[in-house]
Amino acid sequence: MSAADLPRDGAPEIALVGRSNVGKSSLINALAGDVVARTSATPGKTRLINVYRMSGGLDRPFYLVDLPGYGYARGARSAESFQALADVYVGARWNADADAGPATGALLLVDARHPGLDNDLAAYDWLARLARPSAVVATKMDKLTRAERPRATRTLDTAFNGTVLPVSAATGEGLKELWKLIDRLLSKHPPRLKPRPAS
Ligand code: GDP
Image 1 (cartoon, rainbow, N blue to C red):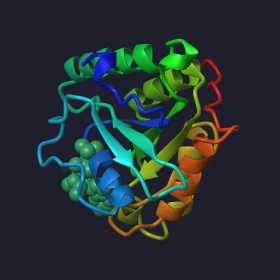
Image 2 (cartoon, protein in one colour; image 1 turned 180 degrees about the vertical axis):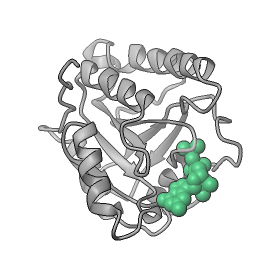
Image 3 (cartoon, rainbow, N blue to C red; image 1 turned 45 degrees about the horizontal axis):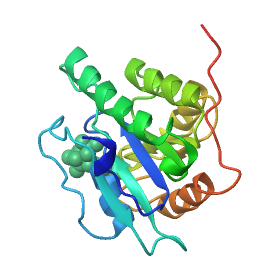
């Protein structure tokens, strides 16, 4: 991929970052209201950066940029390929001069059932350092029972240093709030990730 392959119409972009199998494709489909993203049966299949133009959800179009998932079983290799592509994207979009690209931000997707995994925390720290408009979304909330939820939410908030938005692509829970969050990410005063205290 090169910067030339990215959209050039000036619409803002939200990059989606997360482990393979976290539910990224399902969430894109849920937001698009249609099946636009291929959901992969084999985790770790998506290797390229797919870009989806979203129109209709907000009062202006934007792009969802689907960065490759990281960290599924084969460890180092997928981390490398994630980081390689993510760095190309960031280099092209976030470090470039002002007129090279529109305002961009990111959503970090984490599995609600597995708060605070090392590779998710590493992705959080990476995004926090980049200091772009960003937030954390916990996927697959429907897999938690009502009884499990309060503790899971607390653990997620502790692990990710603030408020994590719980969603489910399966039930549609949290999607309205996710649209509001995306709107805020694209606004003049977007949320950012607070750096975690060094441990
Ligand atoms: P990706 O690799 O991050 O794009 O993940 P996918 O969207 O392909 O989802 C991986 C698996 O998790 C698939 O079997 C999905 O059906 C399942 N999945 C995704 N989102 C949800 C959700 O909100 N709830 C439940 N129960 N399963 C989900």
